Length: 371
Image 1 (cartoon, rainbow, N blue to C red):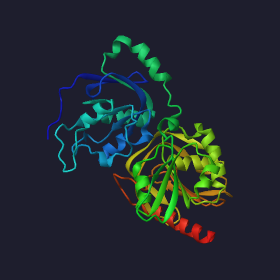
Image 2: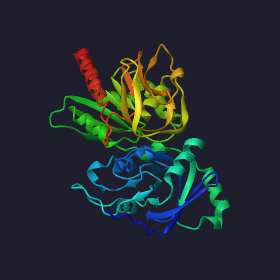
Image 3: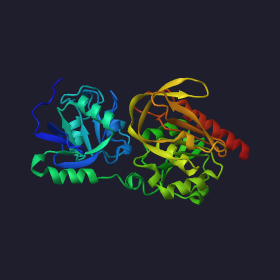
C-alpha cells in the first residue's frame, strides 16, 4: 500500500489564527468553509457525497483514507458538496474488487481541494475544545496575505444551504410492484434513504424542498419522508411554515436529521447549534421507550432542544448517550415521528433500520383507515 508523500505544500488557516502546514491532493487553490470533523473509519465516499456537508471543510479523524478506492454505486448524491477535505494520509494504490478510482482522482474530478500530512489529532482536539470554526485550505503561501485571508475566514457564513442542494423538479423512483406511494422532500437527501424506501415496496416521488401542502395532497401519498440536509434549520422559514400545513394533512410522516429538526420547528420547538456536532458512525443513542442503546451514524451540527417541545404536541423518544441531546421525537397531535440519526446509513451501522418498517406499518394503518 503506497502512501503519497510528495504533494505540493498546502495550508489550513483557522479563524483563530492557527496554521497547519501540510500537502495538497485533489484540486489546487483556496477555499473557505466551516471546519468540522467526522470519526467514521469507513464510508469516506458517502461522506464526500453527502449534501449535508455543504459549505464545510471535512476532517477525517481516522488516519488512513482511500484504501478501498471509490465507486459510483456508493455515492449518496450525484456530486460532492464539501468545500474542502482533510486527512492524515491517503492511499494511492487502493485495493478492492469494486474500486473504480482513487480518492485523489475523485477530488480532482469534483474540483475539491484536499489537504494531507497534517496532525489531524491536534486539529480535532482544537475543534472539540474551541468548537467548530471557519477556516481556509490554500495552496498559496498564506503569510503574504494573512490579514486579508483571516478577514474573509471570519466573515464566512453558510446561507441558503437547502436551496443550493435540493432538486428543482419532481423525480419518481419505483420498484416493479409498488405497495406504497411516498413523497420524499429533498432538503439534501442521501440516495440510500430513497433506496431504503424502494426496497420496502415504495414508489418514491422526490419533490423540491419548497413543495406546498396542496401539491402534496394532489399526489395522494401514503406517507411523507422528510430528508436530511445542510445548514441552520431555523433559516428555512418558508419550509417550516409549509411543514405545519403538510402535517395537518394527516398523512404519516417520518423525518431524518434536518427533516427531524424542521418538523420540530414547525410544531413550536427550538433548535440550537452544538459545540462541535455529531459526525461519525459510532454515536450511541438511547431509545427511551425500551431503554435500548443503539449505535448510529450521524452528521449534524444542530439539535432540537427537547425541553422546548410543547408536551401536548410531542415528546422526546431518543437521546444521545454522550451529551443527552434530543435524538428523536414522537408526535401526539399528528401522525409523525422523527430521528436525528441516520437509520439508512449506507456505510453502516444499520441497527435502527427497523424505523423504516415502523413507517410502512403506519402507512398500512393509514391505507386501511382510508378504505
